[in-house]
Image (cartoon, rainbow, N blue to C red; front, side, top):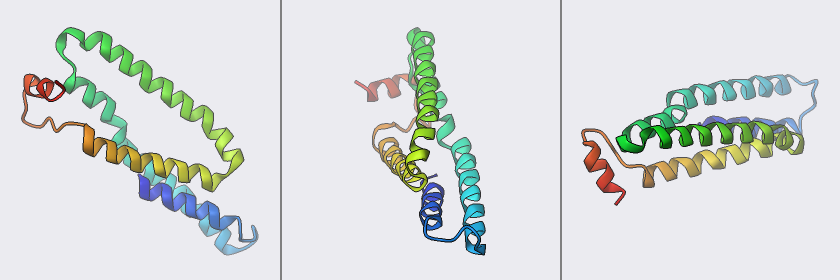
Length: 132
């Protein structure tokens, strides 16, 4: 995701210095679209499912309903917030917007690598012991 967003941000930065009538401008437009499509595919295959997987694996059964509802609310709230902020950011700078998204993706990858526990082959009790 971060690499595809980086490609999109670089293409937007380059488009600022190229005439809209040139062939390179049209090519960079296609590169931008391709980068966004790759990012959406990568998100769907990876990070998009992360809240639902984590929620189902680490929450104890006695609070799964309430905590799952809260996690779903938080997920949709932040999705709405990103959608709301996107237009404001794009008006400011298209390249800057995708640079910020790239930085968030890199931060998220680091966060997941450090703080999200591996749950493969572990029981719920072993996973809960990780958080104590």
